[in-house]
Amino acid sequence: MTDHLNNFSEETGCPKCSSLLIKPVKYTWWGGVIGPKLLHHTKCEECKYTFNSKTRKSNKNGIIIYSVIVFVVFFLVFFFLRMRY
Image (cartoon, rainbow, N blue to C red; front, side):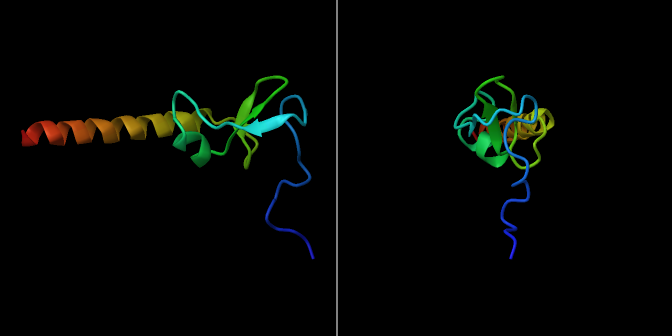
C-alpha cells in the first residue's frame, strides 16, 4: 500500500539547489506567525531560497495576496471603529 500523505515524497530538498538542508519558516515580517503556516513557507539553509513546501514553487504571489487581504481587513476594522465613535 502506498503512502498518500506526502505527494512529493520523491521530490526532496530545495527546488533551486537540491540541498537537503531545508526547514519551515516560523516567522516573517509580512505574515508574522500565521502567514508562513498558511503558505507552507520553507527556506533552504544553503542558498536561502524560500518556497512553498507543498507546491515547491515560489510563494511570491501568495505573499502578495496574503498581505493585501490583511491590509484590507485592518483598514475595514479601523474604518468601522472610527465610524462608531
